Amino acid sequence: MTDFNIKRIAKTLKRRLYKLYNKLFIYMPAAALIFLRSLLLTFVTLFRILLRQPSNRNRNPNQNSNSNPNLNTKRIIIFRQDGIGDYILFRNFLEILKKTPAFSDYKITLLGNAAWKDLAEFLDKEFVDEFIWLDKKRITTDFFYRYKKFKEITSVKYDILIHPFGREFFNADNDLAYLIKADKKIGSIRSSRFLKPYRRIILEKIYDILIPDAEGLRFEFYKNRNFFEKMTGREIKLEKPFINLDFTDKARPPYAAFFIGASVKHRKWSAKNFAEVASYLKNKHGYETVLCGGKDELNDTSEFKKYFPFPFTDTVGKISLIELLSVIKGASLVVSNETMAPHIAMALAKSAVIVISTGGPPYGLFVPYPAGIAGSNNYAAVFHPEIEKNIDDYIKTTKRTGHGYDDKFDIAEITVESVIQKIEKLLKKK
View 1 (cartoon, one colour):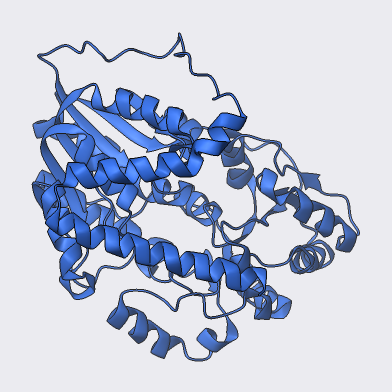
View 2 (cartoon, one colour):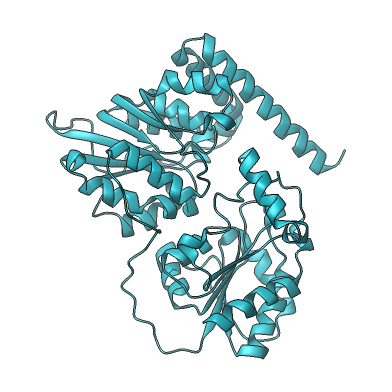
């Protein structure tokens, strides 16, 4: 049996166990099920804990204590645990919430994914009074970390909990939302066309108010806007995500920023292909190359070097997310897999952004950008050739099912020529 088949069986088993867990949630007290789930996670991680010392059990002396909050302070906790790109499409609504008269005197706590900690504390400290960060990997593998975080999160009573995430059904997120102490809990729920009845029952146990997606809305930014409009009772005229970055471009040759990573392996275009595109841009347009990515892409950097015969700037695993903002801001062209980079580039109003995508489940949610945000001059998505030649049919399918094909296509079948063709069309419009 191949590794691929083993992983597929494990994924199927996990999905079925979650489905059983969800259905039990309907008939058993939620607190009992959450306790049992935590107990199972404890057994899974027990041997890891015995073999190593838990990391830094002592409290950080610089961490603000919230164990004795001012009882007269009104508090909101906003719960958001998805990725960096999701945060970029959500973050502008923090300012809107803070400036809404009905909520302006609340202390706002953001319970977020530690993956975007640096960005949020840099960009949104003006609109968030307190940050609490969760390491999503450690919360499921380290019992002591989970206990410490749950204790911290549940030590404060909030007036309102806001969980503006209804795209998928994450059990851990909803478990945590259930445990947080709040007088009113507001959650998001998918359109009834795409929601299984038992999931609605579970969500209604956790949240006092469920805000449904507006019919026909697919793109994540628009879904966020719909949520906050209904929650605040006010029309929000924000048309697109934005990042205000005080940045002075240094005099340097034009360059293309290439993001060679992807959160899922089968959505990662090869380093060889990226190198061929970079070589074309160097020869045809004189563009220098800046290679970007996290530490997980270090091996891809070595592969890129084999096929790229020119000097280039290598930032992979070497710069912070805040520094990455400046790299993207200064680029003449951004080329990326379907990762967070295109969202940052669009929020920075870059003049040329190319996304290479299989057109899988994220289709419509994150890619392509709607014309109302991207216009027609600065953004292009390159999909698998089967989608490109039947794009109208694919759009109809995603509207009917609520998502793209489940990773049906191989990203390796997207050709270098098709990417270059889209780049040339964009550059001619600049």
